[in-house]
Image 1 (cartoon, rainbow, N blue to C red):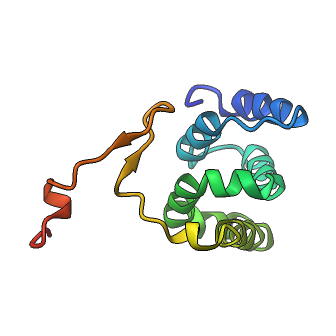
Image 2: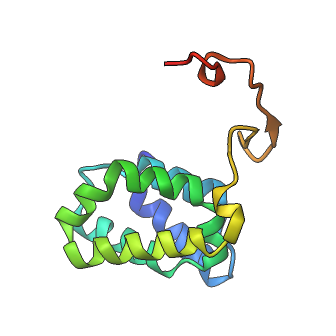
Image 3: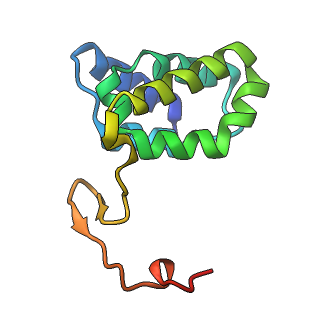
Length: 130
């Protein structure tokens, strides 16, 4: 993903033609898409996000939420109309999951496809945490 994001995106597009959207690989591409990616790659990536099925948007909610937090400004600066279109599509998709959209992710962590119960006995969850 990091070495050749265009090749990774092409592979994910090919999988999408088979109605398969591997969450692990989409999450990595979303996370590791370089800021200095070519304009064509950025545009292709944004168009692909806008065409993902809603159930995939819901599954990728955490990765896409982080993408919006970190890269919304640069995305809108890159392409104003497409950037806001992607924002609307992601938010609409996440909210379409109903009350599950607001389910806390504190408890479950998904490293490599395995659900692990997180401990709440950490500094991040302490009453007096920073």
